[in-house]
Image (tube, rainbow, N blue to C red):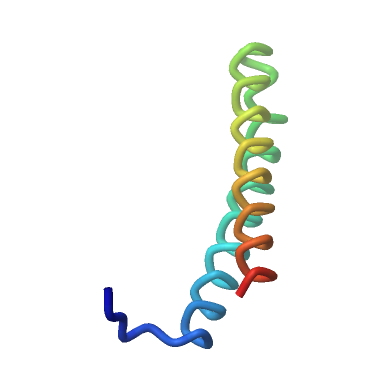
Length: 67
């Protein structure tokens, strides 16, 4: 399958996704702290979402290394 994408453009894209995910993960954790006053369970769910986002970020970092 031919592709027009360069290694450099993939690096840029991965870097963007990594920063984006890290920002979301921080935001999730900040909001979970606020939500805790309303629902401990919902706060736990949001923190779990942040953990999953971190796992996604680790895979993107691995992809960057594998280029």
